[in-house]
Image (cartoon, rainbow, N blue to C red; front, side, top):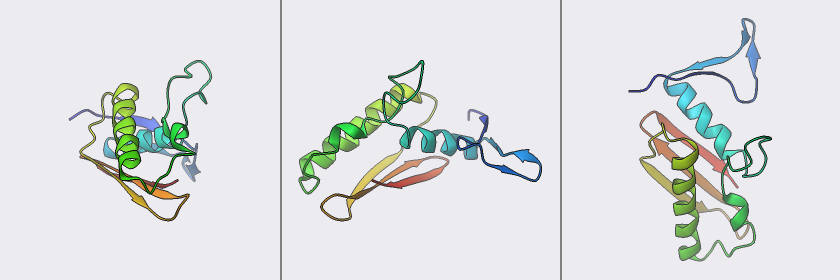
Length: 114
């Protein structure tokens, strides 16, 4: 299994200084950063980030749209984070404008309300 080390993407710190994530925590940290960064937001690498802005005005009650959203997330995550393995993705409609996106990896899960 690949070893990961990195600083918390929100630059959080504790009494010892910046929080350093290792191994499985860092893999989930990178996925969280990617999930919270839309395409076009990174200076010098505008292609990096999630494609969720494309679905902002779509009818999320349509199951076909939710499947397209899940596939777009998987494809883009594989390009941007090739060292991570996604084992499962699930979208759950909360209401007409909001949904939960849950991404599972061998190291754990990342969930975001959108």
